Length: 281
Image: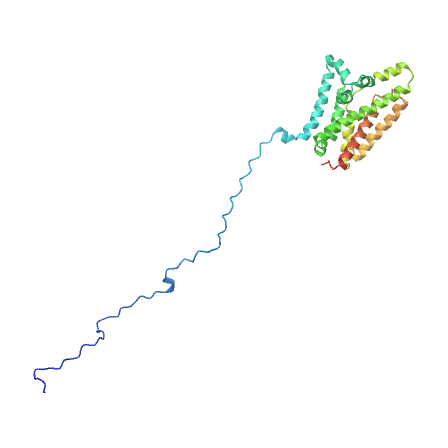
Protein backbone atom coordinates (compact mmCIF):
# COMPACT_ATOMS: atom_id res chain seq x y z
CA UNK A 1 0.00 0.00 0.00
CA UNK A 2 1.32 3.42 -0.82
CA UNK A 3 1.39 6.15 1.70
CA UNK A 4 -1.31 8.63 1.74
CA UNK A 5 -0.43 11.98 0.14
CA UNK A 6 -1.47 13.76 3.21
CA UNK A 7 0.75 11.79 5.48
CA UNK A 8 4.12 13.38 6.60
CA UNK A 9 6.97 11.85 8.47
CA UNK A 10 7.06 12.52 12.13
CA UNK A 11 10.33 14.26 13.30
CA UNK A 12 12.25 12.65 16.08
CA UNK A 13 11.81 14.02 19.62
CA UNK A 14 14.22 16.64 20.81
CA UNK A 15 17.27 15.37 22.59
CA UNK A 16 17.85 15.90 26.28
CA UNK A 17 20.91 18.02 25.70
CA UNK A 18 20.86 21.32 27.58
CA UNK A 19 19.99 24.40 25.76
CA UNK A 20 22.69 26.86 25.11
CA UNK A 21 21.09 29.41 27.43
CA UNK A 22 20.92 27.10 30.46
CA UNK A 23 23.75 27.40 33.06
CA UNK A 24 25.02 24.53 35.26
CA UNK A 25 24.20 24.62 38.92
CA UNK A 26 27.40 24.61 41.05
CA UNK A 27 27.33 22.75 44.37
CA UNK A 28 29.26 24.54 47.19
CA UNK A 29 32.39 22.73 48.29
CA UNK A 30 32.93 22.33 52.01
CA UNK A 31 36.53 22.48 53.28
CA UNK A 32 37.56 20.54 56.38
CA UNK A 33 38.39 23.75 58.19
CA UNK A 34 34.87 25.05 57.58
CA UNK A 35 33.21 22.05 59.08
CA UNK A 36 31.90 22.50 62.64
CA UNK A 37 34.32 21.02 65.11
CA UNK A 38 33.08 18.13 67.11
CA UNK A 39 33.83 18.40 70.86
CA UNK A 40 36.15 15.68 72.14
CA UNK A 41 34.55 12.94 74.10
CA UNK A 42 34.65 13.43 77.86
CA UNK A 43 37.65 11.93 79.59
CA UNK A 44 36.99 8.95 81.78
CA UNK A 45 39.84 9.81 84.25
CA UNK A 46 38.78 11.78 87.40
CA UNK A 47 39.56 15.47 87.39
CA UNK A 48 42.12 16.76 89.98
CA UNK A 49 40.68 18.26 93.17
CA UNK A 50 40.56 22.02 93.43
CA UNK A 51 43.52 23.65 95.20
CA UNK A 52 43.21 24.11 98.96
CA UNK A 53 42.53 27.63 100.15
CA UNK A 54 45.52 29.47 101.66
CA UNK A 55 45.85 29.33 105.47
CA UNK A 56 44.51 32.29 107.37
CA UNK A 57 46.98 35.02 108.28
CA UNK A 58 48.32 34.83 111.85
CA UNK A 59 46.93 37.37 114.28
CA UNK A 60 49.07 40.45 114.85
CA UNK A 61 51.43 40.26 117.86
CA UNK A 62 50.28 41.97 121.04
CA UNK A 63 51.70 45.38 121.74
CA UNK A 64 54.91 45.31 123.80
CA UNK A 65 54.43 45.63 127.52
CA UNK A 66 56.80 46.43 130.34
CA UNK A 67 57.33 42.74 131.06
CA UNK A 68 58.15 41.78 127.45
CA UNK A 69 60.43 44.77 126.99
CA UNK A 70 62.49 44.36 130.16
CA UNK A 71 62.15 40.59 130.53
CA UNK A 72 61.01 38.49 133.45
CA UNK A 73 64.54 37.15 134.19
CA UNK A 74 65.88 40.67 134.70
CA UNK A 75 62.87 41.52 136.84
CA UNK A 76 63.79 38.69 139.21
CA UNK A 77 67.21 40.23 139.77
CA UNK A 78 65.71 43.68 140.29
CA UNK A 79 63.26 42.14 142.77
CA UNK A 80 66.17 40.89 144.89
CA UNK A 81 67.78 44.31 144.76
CA UNK A 82 64.46 45.92 145.68
CA UNK A 83 64.00 43.57 148.64
CA UNK A 84 67.42 44.55 150.00
CA UNK A 85 66.53 48.22 149.63
CA UNK A 86 63.21 47.76 151.46
CA UNK A 87 64.88 45.97 154.38
CA UNK A 88 67.52 48.71 154.53
CA UNK A 89 64.75 51.31 154.72
CA UNK A 90 63.22 49.53 157.74
CA UNK A 91 66.61 49.60 159.46
CA UNK A 92 66.59 53.39 159.23
CA UNK A 93 63.38 53.64 161.25
CA UNK A 94 64.08 53.39 164.99
CA UNK A 95 60.60 52.09 165.69
CA UNK A 96 61.39 48.95 163.71
CA UNK A 97 64.91 48.34 165.02
CA UNK A 98 63.95 45.99 167.90
CA UNK A 99 62.03 43.82 165.44
CA UNK A 100 64.88 43.97 162.92
CA UNK A 101 67.48 42.98 165.54
CA UNK A 102 65.36 40.01 166.54
CA UNK A 103 64.51 38.69 163.07
CA UNK A 104 67.11 40.07 160.63
CA UNK A 105 70.41 39.57 162.49
CA UNK A 106 72.27 36.25 162.50
CA UNK A 107 74.03 35.14 165.68
CA UNK A 108 74.70 32.06 167.76
CA UNK A 109 72.10 33.34 170.18
CA UNK A 110 69.40 33.67 167.51
CA UNK A 111 70.04 30.13 166.32
CA UNK A 112 70.01 28.87 169.93
CA UNK A 113 66.57 30.45 170.24
CA UNK A 114 65.54 28.62 167.04
CA UNK A 115 65.19 31.68 164.92
CA UNK A 116 66.44 29.74 161.91
CA UNK A 117 64.98 32.22 159.46
CA UNK A 118 67.73 34.68 160.35
CA UNK A 119 70.09 32.56 158.25
CA UNK A 120 68.22 33.94 155.22
CA UNK A 121 66.80 37.26 156.39
CA UNK A 122 70.25 38.47 157.44
CA UNK A 123 71.28 38.16 153.77
CA UNK A 124 68.87 41.01 152.96
CA UNK A 125 70.11 43.32 155.72
CA UNK A 126 72.59 46.13 155.20
CA UNK A 127 72.90 48.71 157.95
CA UNK A 128 74.87 51.38 156.08
CA UNK A 129 74.16 52.84 152.63
CA UNK A 130 77.74 52.14 151.50
CA UNK A 131 77.37 48.45 152.41
CA UNK A 132 74.09 48.29 150.50
CA UNK A 133 75.52 50.08 147.46
CA UNK A 134 78.61 47.86 147.26
CA UNK A 135 76.67 44.61 147.46
CA UNK A 136 73.95 45.65 145.01
CA UNK A 137 76.44 46.94 142.42
CA UNK A 138 78.35 43.66 142.57
CA UNK A 139 75.12 41.67 142.33
CA UNK A 140 73.82 43.70 139.38
CA UNK A 141 77.11 43.55 137.47
CA UNK A 142 77.76 39.84 137.81
CA UNK A 143 74.24 38.55 138.32
CA UNK A 144 72.46 40.21 135.41
CA UNK A 145 72.91 37.19 133.13
CA UNK A 146 72.23 34.55 135.79
CA UNK A 147 68.39 34.53 135.70
CA UNK A 148 68.40 34.12 131.91
CA UNK A 149 71.17 31.50 131.83
CA UNK A 150 69.93 29.44 134.79
CA UNK A 151 66.25 30.31 134.88
CA UNK A 152 64.41 32.35 137.48
CA UNK A 153 63.80 29.49 139.97
CA UNK A 154 67.44 28.38 139.79
CA UNK A 155 68.66 31.95 140.28
CA UNK A 156 66.48 32.35 143.37
CA UNK A 157 67.76 28.99 144.65
CA UNK A 158 71.35 30.12 144.06
CA UNK A 159 70.85 33.31 146.08
CA UNK A 160 69.12 31.51 148.95
CA UNK A 161 71.63 28.64 148.94
CA UNK A 162 74.47 31.16 149.11
CA UNK A 163 72.73 32.79 152.06
CA UNK A 164 72.30 29.53 154.00
CA UNK A 165 75.80 28.19 153.31
CA UNK A 166 77.51 31.50 154.10
CA UNK A 167 75.50 31.80 157.31
CA UNK A 168 76.46 28.26 158.26
CA UNK A 169 80.13 28.94 157.59
CA UNK A 170 80.08 32.07 159.75
CA UNK A 171 78.25 30.27 162.56
CA UNK A 172 80.85 27.49 162.44
CA UNK A 173 83.63 30.07 162.74
CA UNK A 174 81.91 31.75 165.69
CA UNK A 175 81.35 28.45 167.43
CA UNK A 176 85.03 27.58 166.99
CA UNK A 177 86.11 30.91 168.47
CA UNK A 178 83.72 30.44 171.39
CA UNK A 179 85.02 26.97 172.15
CA UNK A 180 88.62 28.21 172.11
CA UNK A 181 87.84 30.94 174.64
CA UNK A 182 87.67 30.21 178.34
CA UNK A 183 86.74 33.67 179.57
CA UNK A 184 83.03 33.93 180.23
CA UNK A 185 82.82 37.53 179.11
CA UNK A 186 84.40 36.80 175.74
CA UNK A 187 82.23 33.76 175.28
CA UNK A 188 79.13 35.86 175.94
CA UNK A 189 80.28 38.48 173.48
CA UNK A 190 80.86 35.90 170.78
CA UNK A 191 77.49 34.33 171.55
CA UNK A 192 75.71 37.65 171.06
CA UNK A 193 77.78 38.92 168.15
CA UNK A 194 75.61 39.42 165.10
CA UNK A 195 76.19 39.32 161.37
CA UNK A 196 74.25 41.04 158.58
CA UNK A 197 74.81 41.57 154.90
CA UNK A 198 74.19 40.04 151.49
CA UNK A 199 77.90 39.52 150.86
CA UNK A 200 77.70 35.73 151.14
CA UNK A 201 74.79 35.48 148.69
CA UNK A 202 76.50 37.96 146.36
CA UNK A 203 79.69 35.88 146.51
CA UNK A 204 77.67 32.87 145.36
CA UNK A 205 76.35 34.84 142.39
CA UNK A 206 79.79 36.24 141.53
CA UNK A 207 81.54 32.86 141.44
CA UNK A 208 78.58 31.30 139.64
CA UNK A 209 78.66 33.95 136.92
CA UNK A 210 82.43 33.63 136.53
CA UNK A 211 82.16 29.85 136.10
CA UNK A 212 79.37 30.23 133.53
CA UNK A 213 81.41 32.70 131.47
CA UNK A 214 85.07 32.27 132.48
CA UNK A 215 86.45 34.27 129.57
CA UNK A 216 84.38 37.36 130.23
CA UNK A 217 86.51 40.47 130.54
CA UNK A 218 86.41 42.11 133.95
CA UNK A 219 88.26 45.31 134.80
CA UNK A 220 90.02 45.04 138.15
CA UNK A 221 89.78 48.39 139.94
CA UNK A 222 88.14 49.63 136.70
CA UNK A 223 91.58 49.68 135.05
CA UNK A 224 93.17 46.24 134.62
CA UNK A 225 91.34 43.81 132.27
CA UNK A 226 91.38 40.20 133.47
CA UNK A 227 89.22 37.16 132.66
CA UNK A 228 86.26 36.53 134.93
CA UNK A 229 87.65 33.26 136.24
CA UNK A 230 90.80 35.10 137.29
CA UNK A 231 88.69 37.67 139.14
CA UNK A 232 86.87 34.86 140.94
CA UNK A 233 90.21 33.38 141.99
CA UNK A 234 91.43 36.71 143.37
CA UNK A 235 88.08 37.19 145.10
CA UNK A 236 88.36 33.86 146.91
CA UNK A 237 92.08 34.32 147.64
CA UNK A 238 91.53 37.70 149.30
CA UNK A 239 88.85 36.27 151.61
CA UNK A 240 91.01 33.27 152.44
CA UNK A 241 93.86 35.58 153.36
CA UNK A 242 91.49 37.66 155.48
CA UNK A 243 90.25 34.54 157.25
CA UNK A 244 93.81 33.56 158.16
CA UNK A 245 94.47 37.05 159.47
CA UNK A 246 91.26 36.99 161.53
CA UNK A 247 92.33 33.67 163.09
CA UNK A 248 95.40 35.35 164.57
CA UNK A 249 93.49 38.50 165.56
CA UNK A 250 89.80 37.66 166.09
CA UNK A 251 88.76 41.22 166.81
CA UNK A 252 90.84 42.85 164.12
CA UNK A 253 88.35 42.69 161.27
CA UNK A 254 84.62 43.27 161.01
CA UNK A 255 84.37 41.42 157.68
CA UNK A 256 82.85 37.94 157.70
CA UNK A 257 85.45 36.29 155.47
CA UNK A 258 84.20 32.83 156.35
CA UNK A 259 80.74 33.78 155.13
CA UNK A 260 82.18 35.06 151.85
CA UNK A 261 84.09 31.82 151.32
CA UNK A 262 81.01 29.74 152.15
CA UNK A 263 78.91 31.66 149.65
CA UNK A 264 81.58 31.39 146.95
CA UNK A 265 81.79 27.63 147.51
CA UNK A 266 78.00 27.31 147.31
CA UNK A 267 77.88 29.28 144.04
CA UNK A 268 80.63 27.23 142.42
CA UNK A 269 79.04 23.92 143.48
CA UNK A 270 75.54 24.94 142.43
CA UNK A 271 76.50 26.18 138.97
CA UNK A 272 78.79 23.19 138.48
CA UNK A 273 75.92 20.82 139.19
CA UNK A 274 73.63 22.76 136.89
CA UNK A 275 76.20 22.53 134.09
CA UNK A 276 76.65 18.77 134.59
CA UNK A 277 72.86 18.30 134.53
CA UNK A 278 72.63 20.30 131.29
CA UNK A 279 70.36 22.95 132.80
CA UNK A 280 72.48 25.92 131.73
CA UNK A 281 71.32 27.95 128.73
